[in-house]
Length: 318
Image 1 (cartoon, rainbow, N blue to C red):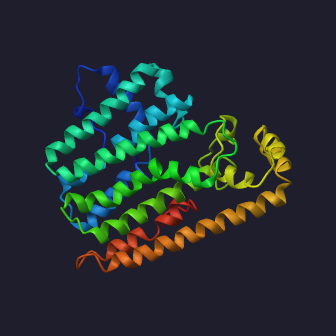
Image 2 (spheres, rainbow, N blue to C red):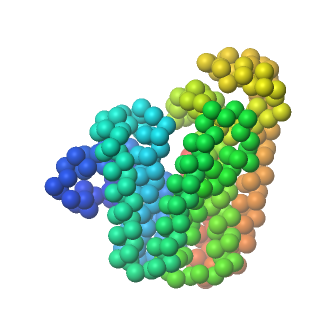
Image 3 (tube, rainbow, N blue to C red):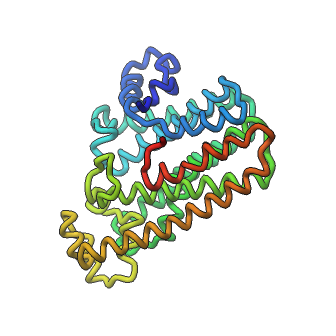
C-alpha cells in the first residue's frame, strides 16, 4: 500500500505555529492524500548515498514543501476546484489564505535549509523556486493560444515540472558537498528527461490515456490550455481545423474533429515513439552515471532505471 506524505512524516503539525490553527488545518488538508513521490525519490537516493537521516528528512521536506506551495498557487491561478479529490484550498480557505500558505511554505524552506549550512544547496533551491515562478508566468501566457508548439511547452515544463525532478536527484549530492561538474551535468539531463516524460504522460491523462487516476477528460482543453499531446495533435492543422478541435466537448467529438479514432490512435503511437526516444536517452545517461559513483553506490542505478516506466507508462513498481 502506498504511504501518504503525512505517513512519511514529511508534514508534521509541530513544525508550524500552534497559534495559527487555520494555517495548520489548510496544510493538513493539502498534504493528506498526496503520493509523496518526490520525497520517496529523495529517500531512495539517500539510502544508496549514505545520507544521514536528519539530512534526508530535510531534503524530503524541502521538495514536498516546494511542490505543495506550487500546487496552492497553481490551483488559484488555474481556478481549479479540486485538489487530490478535495475542495482546493483557495475555495475552501479563500484565495488570500492560499497565497499566504504557499508563500509561508517557501519561506520555511529557506529557513530550514539555512540551518543546514550548505550555501550551495540554498542557492540551488532558490534557483529552482525562481524557475517554477518563471514557468508559471510562461504557462499563463499560452492559455488560449491554440497554436502553441511542443518546443514552447517543453520550455515551460523544464522550468516547472523538470526543475523539481532535477532537484530530487541533484540535491542529495550537493548536500554531501559533491560538486563534480560532469556528475551534475548528467544528473541535470536525467532530471530534465524525467520531468518531460512525467508531464507528457500527465497530459495524456486528459485524453483518457492510461488514466488510472480518473483525471477529468479534456480538462486542460476546456480550460483553454493546449497541452503537449494536444499541441502534437494540432501541429500542421489549419486555423479552421484547430477551431473545431479545441471546441470539442467530449472525447467522441474530439476523435471526430481530429479525423477519426484511427487517426487519433496513430498520432498517439507516434507520440509514444517520440517519448521512447527520451527513455533511451535517459538510459544512456544512466550508464554514464555509473562510472561517477563511489564504490558501493552502484545499486542506485538499479533503482533509477525503472523511473521512466513509472512516470511515463504509469506502470506500478513491482
